[in-house]
Length: 567
Image (cartoon, rainbow, N blue to C red; front, side, top):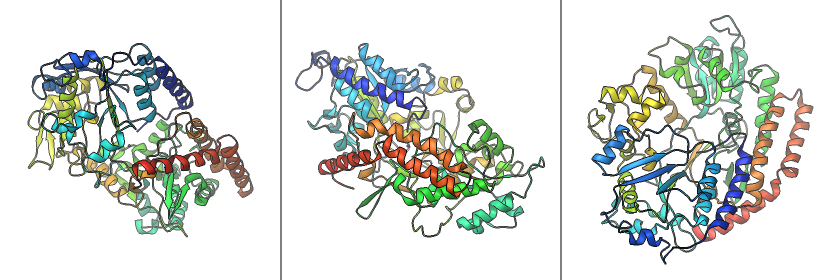
């Protein structure tokens, strides 16, 4: 689904712009033949031949605990595909690390980053990476690479037809994508609903939810304290596409998934311009003023929010159920703690809202890029490894992550059914919760492969350690069917101009959302709310250049669909 959302975001973006400029200026273009591959790689005998090295270095564009002698890496080296992969992780901010790496001579063999237009631009402008399009059209030699759906390959081509990376972590079936871990929802404790003298059906409307919250406020927890009727996490690291308030916004018909843009007829509606964005916060403000929302919701840290849920202080939550967290029920075998009673419910109906807003856009397109140094002497090993990881088998992500069936895990009854870990020592380290122990068995490089709606490993574990473990899968499958999840459209994938208004102003607009959401929630009365709302709208335009951002988006979108079409 993603994504650094920390408060240093604006600084990182400035560095990213500087990065593109620096690597563009430092590119010499020397040593390349007509194909863009360096003379070293072309003449080394390893560029397209299996006679070259069977090892390569892979730099990961994220922080990770590395153990380059893990059991899964040993299998890659000694068995299949017969390649030794030496990993290097990134320390600190990925964009800053990339800037430093490129300006210090680049990475040795290959680098893998989550898909990001700024990274792609920096890599290509550096002159340090090679074009790879020829290797996706060699089914006899590289069947895995050739199996990548053409719709992904075509979209990766630049204006000259070059493809500068190996795409990974995409859906094998672009027309029937796996929905992912849907989690943004309304979550209620069924034991509190029963104590309130109500049923889950009573919560099908926003009016019913209000009635429940008022009844829940009269109920006390096991320690004798009144329950907090409604709570959610106002995380400073979230964004418009992923925040707990989105569950309320979606009920009011506001789409927040992707870039927060939804097409209705021939018109594009941006989240902040949807009149129901204001109405959703008016509803939250009303609940807050009635003391039906946790009074400390604005200042609570994630640890405090989770502790209150674990201890049974909260009757209802909105937002990602993973923020509660899911361990509240996964570690239980029955109704021995409040977490057992959590249940996701359909998004409540709001008057005059015909369609709930979208909170998750299912994007089957590649989530990661693997760039190859034009001067590598280990091209054959790189291609061989990713040809293996990208085999189009439904279980391939699990094979890449944990080894093949029969080694450390196996099918319970039949392929693509339930499975269990079969090696006790591997299982113990893998699920220890200790990242150092886990790194001894697997580097968890599932993202070097692809995924399929036909079979997802973590929804099919055979031996659940506790009865409550299966609830997480049940929740996410249910949330995915509540109307707030849809497949990607062309307007979700607009690549904004480097150095353009959107790129420069988007961090400001995001900061404004975080600044004013708290003010809107805590407004003392209707008059104060209206004043804050008008300030927010004014700040969007004055500080965020909101209308200019939208104009640039429309212009860019029209240009893109002229090239790639509309879907």
